[in-house]
Image (cartoon, rainbow, N blue to C red; front, side):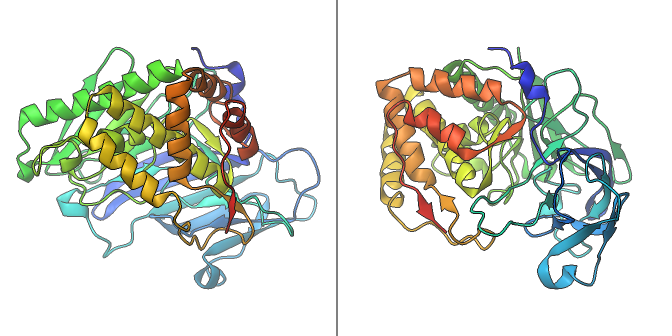
Length: 403
């Protein structure tokens, strides 16, 4: 299914252009610019740059239409207020940032520049939460040079030695940066996508294991694309030195211990984990439902696709254990999220995953409908009730909870 032309009209607060990425000793230094696309109507006199949850630290900030209050307030509340100048308009305004990894921060297991996922690891630009609102914005930015071409879900960009600059040409919604000194990076171009692996040279991962990772990423992407009938063109990165998943990795980079791919340990391939990570390129990066409610629904759909790929791969025992784990966890209280507004609706990822998984087995048309929705809204952030309506039209009723 081709991407709808509406996907090239981002319904977001801002576009984000990453102008430069330079690899330094403690990781990348990023020069970025938010290009504000606020509607032509009277709006709030202030917005803020939210630093909470960002893995890169703010080094400098300037805005051509607003006064920036930084850094005194920022240290207390984790936000940088921007106050609109008299007579100015947010629409078309620019917020320029320089960000870096703090000296003394860990250089993960000898990997000089990574991993970093953009825009996930950057601060987000938001309006203040309006009184009485229960919808909370997530990271509301489209990444990198939107053009007349359809943006890919993800692009893996690999730096080399310290001091070099990273460049890319294609428009993208997300970029994963891995590699650096002492790393082996391997790229494979498939018929419609690219897979990249990155591992420390000292880890001595066998060549046949690297080939297995490429095959698993490709097979998962093929399954998701066939199920949704949507091939947007993705580039997937596997960071094989991870000791735990990357906090903000959703889409471009599969950051999980290499045991996930059946390398070492019990040699069991965790299809569901890999499939969920790959499927998040479609739901979570390509098509984004707004707020914490939308996040739960999107990740739940990706998790359901991971379960369905596990079933298709014939990994019966692992599928059973995974389903039992989801069933145990779907009724548990949702974890506390300090960024969620009190009263905001939220959904259990595990409940969504089980409901979508079971409904898809009964009615394959559900996945086609989700693929159509993703294609129509590619590159946009949509209100979560729109995605919820697709599920409800196929008989899925989810239990909304509040923060």
